[in-house]
Image (tube, rainbow, N blue to C red; front, side, top):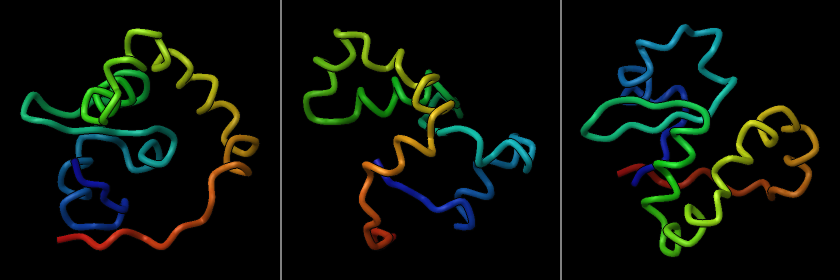
Length: 87
């Protein structure tokens, strides 16, 4: 799994099917099957994380719509970290 900033050329190519105005309004994830967004993307991300199966079993991915609607509140609890290097 690799995190890409929206302006990375690979992300631009992957997200070309998403209207530019909508790209920042949701989380997106891509795998061999294609691109998913919002709750399905969050579910896909959880499948790739260690312990993600437990989180999926609890239905945690279903909270994504609430998180998306409350980004300004949730963002207060997420530390600003340096952008990870992209290989």
